[in-house]
Length: 542
Image 1 (cartoon, rainbow, N blue to C red):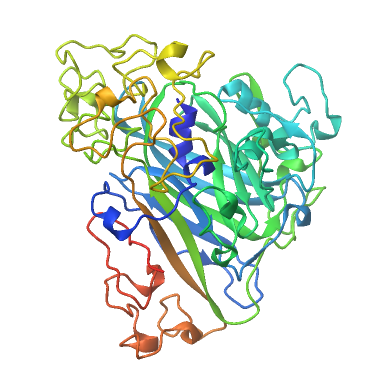
Image 2 (cartoon, rainbow, N blue to C red; image 1 turned 60 degrees about the vertical axis):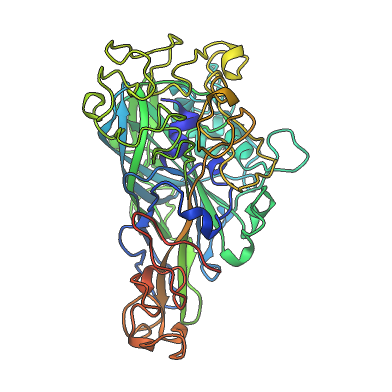
């Protein structure tokens, strides 16, 4: 698995989310992109001043290709800081099903991946750092509970050893710090410090340990990143998911493609006890994988029965008065250079259009790969002979970001040490981009050259330019906070916030105020018609 490419897309790594919305003229030529709330965002407690468990069902249906996302909680919803909740408290759970390509095959494998989340340290509560990496050894070190933070056999921090909390939650990962640095590690700007962090681990497809870090940032914190001035405090507190270590060199572990994702996350309004911090934790609190003893988390409920008992700390608080809250996700697609509808990272022939090829089928059934070797007919120099590594550089065709140009040496892929040769970083993160899109295009430096540019494609390929168009949108789910009767028509918009009759034909009893065929609950502009184009989410209106 190339963690810098596939894991980054698996949910929403911050490095891929530093971009702004496209102008409406760009939307017509972007590839299909339809991220969506598959059901309404729900609050278990909608009373003013309540502490709701928040459930968010979010899908990236095919053929959409997610590049990144940022969630914004409503400015009127109060979220506790790390210092207000004990490290190790059980916070919630994310259940996902990822559509993966395994061993150089198409995306045909459904892989359930579930994360139990606990409160984790931030710079406000610890000055102890722990390193990451793209291998199982690095991820396993984060998942262990032994206080040996550098995996050298010596317990540097006995206070973290066998306390029921993974070391990756007790200590602050360097890659989280560096991912939140607007100008990169070592630059003059300091990293953004999160208000809160939630941590968990899981094993993906039986081959790879993946740590997850959800970072809750102060409102307006992302505005210091290039192209992000629009992310002001008025949008509320942004949060991002950092899956794996996006700062680590790429590596391959048998997962060749990430295609799509469906997920449901539930984050508690009041912390629960973590049964795994008990003096004698239950057996399910420990699992072994790849030579590591992984410390897990278990929902001990509230009230809990173990000591220490992390139950009862308020994590989320509704506003004190009746008000419509907006749950927002800003999502962007991958770039698509040749305009064939396949994001560059998924498109093996990224500068040769092949719209009839289907990456979500077995290679032999994909409609464009006669020899079934993962290199489509459109760019396979010999499509009658099976060769799953056409350029012989050790990276299988569907993994290789330059499948026809060997990039296993420094001159062929931009790297200087092993495993960095597939690293694609076109534009430095501290530099603005003219189209405000993703900083990397998924085309490896060895083949991201002008000579490979295609006719009719947007601009000449360059290893220092992010090539290809993309799509961006803000999806919304409205929730009414108020006592019984506060939302008469049940559309998520409180009566007091319904547009006046002059702007909305039906007023309080109209669940599609602007008649754009997007219900008010999911409409990102309730009183201004902006209907969805086929296969697209709504465009953004301000």
